[in-house]
Each structure stands twice: as C-alpha cells, then as structure tokens.
Image 1 (cartoon, rainbow, N blue to C red):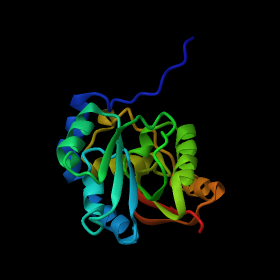
Image 2 (image 1 turned 90 degrees about the vertical axis):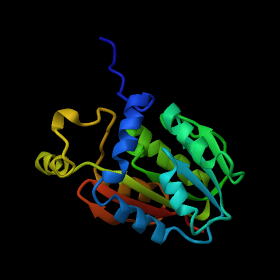
Image 3 (image 1 turned 45 degrees about the horizontal axis):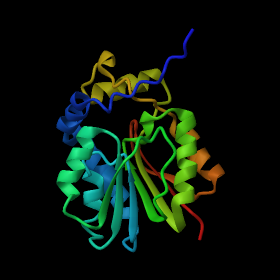
Image 4 (image 1 turned 180 degrees about the vertical axis):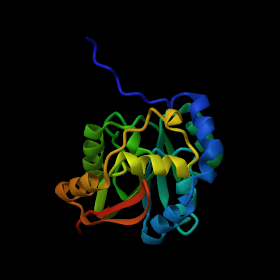
Length: 214
C-alpha cells in the first residue's frame, strides 16, 4: 500500500484567503503577539520570519525596529502576493518563496527568528530538523520566538479549544500536525538553545522561546 502523504492545504488560494478573513478573530492572538514583541530584543538587526503569511507579525516587529533587515519566507501564492503588496517597496525586506517542508535555503545569519502559527503545519520529524536549522542560522545570542499552535494534553481539552474558536471538529484544518508543548521545549534544550521557556499560553496557543548561547 502506498504511504499516505501528509496533508497541507496552504497552497490553495481558497484555504489561504479563508484564514486571512479569520486571522483577526482568533481569541487572544494579540496577547500572544504582544508577549512575543515584548521579548524580542530592540537591538535586533536582521529577522527571519518563517511562514510569514501576510506579514502581520513581521510588520508589528518592525514598528519598533524600523531599521532592521528581514527575510519573509512563505510558499503560498496567496500569502506571497500579500507579502509583495505589503513589503514590495521596502528594500529592507526580502521575500523568499520556500516550503518549510524542505530544508531552509542559504540566507545568511539572523539576530532573531520569528514565526506565527506556521511550524505546526509540518510533520513532527520536520519540526525538529527545522528547529535545528533555525539554531544554525542564528547569530550567537540570537532569539527564537515562535507563537505556535500546540497539542492539548487530552482530547477533552482539544474539544474545549475548538469550542472556544467556534469550530466544529469536522471543520478542523487537516493541515494541522499538532505536537505537545513539552516535547518542543525539550527539543530546543537538546539542540542547544538556552533560556528555553513558554512565556505565554492560552489553551493550544503558546509562545515558545529560546536563545542561542553567546
């Protein structure tokens, strides 16, 4: 029997546009973003935004860091179009078409890597290897700030999360490949990150952080 390939619907314009319509209604999202921005060093000079989407998080990060350079990375045609509309005239932002299922391309080094609800779309094996690639791409002292969708400890808690989002179980995004928070924190420690923690959490939404040693 042929192996079933993991589902990822994000190349579909319909799927991407539906998400953009709902993005501002995700409960407590702004709290998670605020926690991420609060801990992102103002001295950051180069940012990698993984799964940048429409550039929402990167745009917020650059408000207090207008002179930083950035790479916005995504593979959805709809999201890439939104990124070009948002940052196309900004010479400090490079837009790179790339699927996180594949190893990161050579892009130089970064002071920070940020992400918002993107890494949970890759398989668990790829999550770990992606974290390793992020570690290698960071400068000493570089910050990882991943606002992520993680797995609930129990099925009952997962159903409560869906209810809070007014989402029926049958309407869940089949692209989601949710992994528990503890495993991801352990991976970061094993890879070499220090000051690893979850600095904010609401149900299945969590801010995962770590710093590459100086």
